[in-house]
Length: 228
Image 1 (cartoon, rainbow, N blue to C red):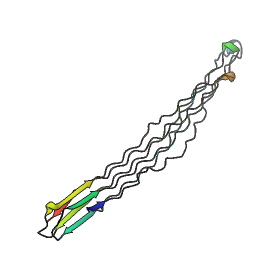
Image 2 (image 1 turned 135 degrees about the vertical axis):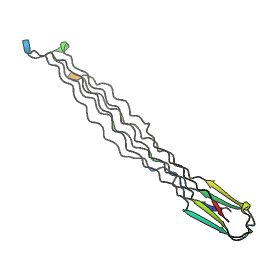
Image 3 (image 1 turned 45 degrees about the vertical axis):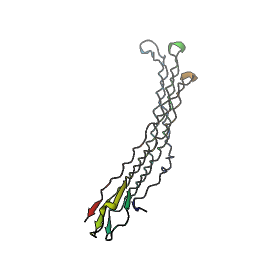
Image 4 (image 1 turned 180 degrees about the horizontal axis):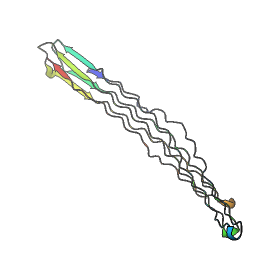
């Protein structure tokens, strides 16, 4: 059986996804109505204006970071006073980091503003509603936990008859956890209604889901040393 010098692995299951949901953007501003009032020098001749486009939804909440893997103790000293009869194998490993958690869902895009109403029929027709806003970007995934380090191993050979060629030291680096997944993008906002009770403009597109976290760093390794 080898002599084990290990740091503890963090859980290899990611933290629970973020469930906080961002609220939607508010409705965009309404367009102005057409105006054909007055006469002569103060006559109005204003077209109705479209509603404003809806705003993009809010970005989702950031996912939970993974926990770091465990490191070995700061200094492990092994003292050999008797001759070795067989191969002495020492396995050294840092603990692996936990994956990051998934980010939260982005908020819904804002509703487009309604268009202004007509004035005097065909001369100043009703204006269209604003486009629905794009859904919010999915929240960034949590960072993966860092891998645990392997600290110095010191082998003290106190007996002259110890054959150091029978000593084998194996290393396994603590691996960083993988990046958390991006949250889902929010839904697109509905389009605003045209003036005079007309139909709605198109709904906005869903938000992007392209916001992963960062991978955790692999753990450091300190080489073993002999003290003769």
